[in-house]
Image 1 (tube, protein in one colour):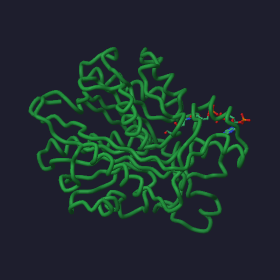
Image 2 (cartoon, protein in one colour):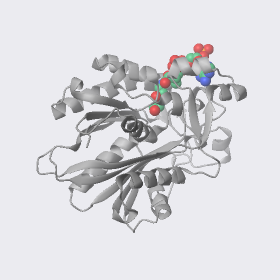
Image 3 (tube, protein in one colour):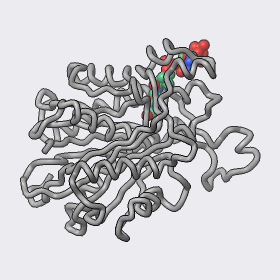
Image 4 (cartoon, protein in one colour):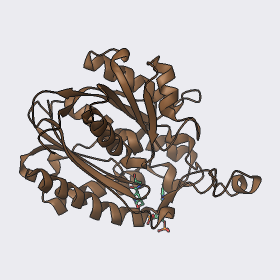
Length: 332
Ligand code: UT7
């Protein structure tokens, strides 16, 4: 990062996990699956599911309020709100606008980023650069998902994998050079969007009786293909961002990968030749919360004392698009 750019730091973090905890055993009561299958294939043991009247914006608002309290900042100090989500309250307006309203924020810049499970990293980088432009003082970056409403609960191959939740951070500038968000690489390859998509509901296939009958308003995924790409690209981009920053994997205190499948994380660790105990894993309790997975994991890493001021922390993600990326932070 050029020396004349001010440092951008995470001033506060907050999460919100819906109250309802649904275990694999609970799911096996209502569909043809087992705890053993889900646990051995994915590492997932349970997930939180939001209440019917709790929308993605509600989860994001609660996480944002927690992040503001953690930062000791008031909502009036925020002049940029970016929300990463693939389960927006509505196609439009943006969930960021809805959250801006619910937070009672000033009439600031607010928009969504759609990069699925990589969304939080895309949002973090966008907010960092906007803060460095000098036009903004403090930003709220939120990853929020109510995946349960876009899952096909008749498709056991996908519905057991995801969960609901939200994580948020307050970003601000610091006079200390070379701290906070140090480097980031974001990538996309849209040549095979069908690997992970929702076929209908957009302008390509507007909602109709046929699309509803064909259950095309739910998430569809080619799990095997995504698995291969994730292992290859998430590990590579993590190493690339470290090389760009001139930091070795040994110098990283904690790796925070997107929580999609513990086997993907194990393969990534193997490829990077980094011991697994340096990776934060919480998929056992939350499942895959898409854009919320990294901020929730980052929050838990800090709360458990796994990251301390001065530590290098590496975030890495992949998701629909396909999109992937990695971000290196020097914790403050
Ligand atoms: O955030 C990014 C989004 N997505 C991902 O990261 C997903 C990446 N992919 C994966 O994590 C894995 O590919 C899965 C966990 C989705 C699937 O694991 P897999 O080892 O690739 O399993 P599979 O799809 O090959 O399915 C194996 C078997 C099938 O049965 P047959 O055809 O071999 O008889 C499935 O029907 O497992 C069956 N199966 C299930 N059995 C019990 C699929 N889902 C279930 C289930 N419970 N929930």
